[in-house]
Length: 394
Ligand SMILES: Cc1ncc(COP(=O)(O)O)c(C=O)c1O
Image (tube, rainbow, N blue to C red; front, side, top):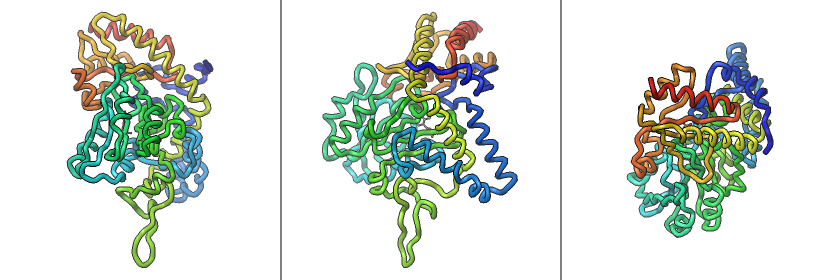
């Protein structure tokens, strides 16, 4: 296992000195290289003007595409800069043609916003949304998925990692089934990007959406979309502007080639430059090494939580990632979060609407989510457990 220089990672993350930040699945802490890019870009806009800065900083903006292509093993033309993961996902989801009776196959651990979109397309377009059952680990049952694939299926859509648990769905196995059947595969890897290697060719997905602020450690209000070139070019985006498409004299318009047809003209360019820096920074550590350390810290945390009186770890999965969820008999997740917050410890509460089908099946309400990253330490896990013991007694 490659080891990371944690002292350097923490020196690059000054806030970690005073804060125990276990909310990396919410929004992680930006490292200095990323925040400096953001601040310097904004300063340049202040000094030179927004349009003028975009021209001066063309290389920093282009860096976003170059780093994303390295990160996901694709071409720069297959990447779009988006304002968040949901819109990135929506642009592909709503572009896939669906007529009454067509099927969308998805999984139990879907993200709440995706569930709303499935319901909307069911209501509006007559889509039949089929939720593939879980296997005994809570992952999508790939044998059941393979049995459900037939000519009615127009899309396989999967949350790689749910917002509300440590489970990692077997994306590459799903990709193999989708490829064999020739069915488009849309992967929401909002929680995977920056936490683990994601090679879109190896996974076999046609599109992958994600956000900047979580495991990638980029700024808020940034996201991205990978869309395989040939797939993107078959799709008519639900919205187009004069950046995404060109007006043609005499009538008509022509969407841009590749993934750029999904972009807006107006963008958070400081965020775009900073997200490029965040991707470059993550690649500098190595995504395999990041994953190994994140998984190890999360396993330590789960092990310690499981020993505590009244505490139940609610994560499913065979492979479990950096998201650790739990409930406690003594206190509600909201009270635990507040109480830890007073001790300079950040976690978040996942409401049952975050992962609605899975939580309903398991009879779960809100849960506490402590999500670790590679710059966190074994000592912080111990400190967290001691603080939680106190918080449960408050
Ligand atoms: C699995 C999953 N998908 C999508 C999203 C939405 O991301 P964004 O808020 O950037 O749109 C989240 C956010 O928590 C998520 O966990």
